Image (cartoon, rainbow, N blue to C red):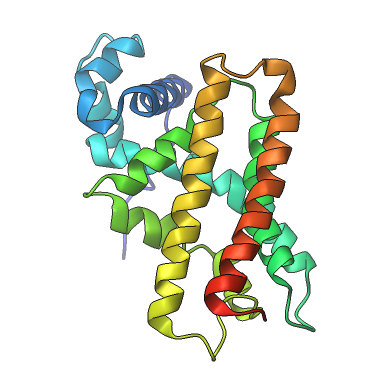
Length: 223
């Protein structure tokens, strides 16, 4: 007979502390990079008296980073999966439809999120961090919506060499992730007037869709 008691739910105070640590870490890592921020600095900036707060709430830096990544990408994935499923499965989708599903959920998130945001810059930092890169690609760029899109055949086709597809996907990843981070940086640092936020995000979305369609057609041939 299993008599193990269920794990207790975290207290409201603990939830508040975790959220503050995550928000603070996201900002500091986005602005300074992972190498230039210690867990002690995060605790202090989050107003935690205990300098071991990150260790207590997350068991270390890496778990804190993974929690922040999940919070950022889960919201976007929820939007993307709805767009992907709305396409249906009766036909092969176009490159434009494919990249609209890939790009626009992130655009909509950044339009609706209260500014300033740090998620795009944080994600870009994580993607180039040697210890995190494989995790980010596997867990956050290989989501159900991405896998469903692959089955629709706009990019992943039987006539495309796997090595070429891998190189293509790396280019798409780098262009989209860092373009988002650049715009987020410019908005946060006053290089773009906040009144232009929605227009600039929508323009970036359309520009990326156009660019990625052209890149894919050139490298892979038109579907």
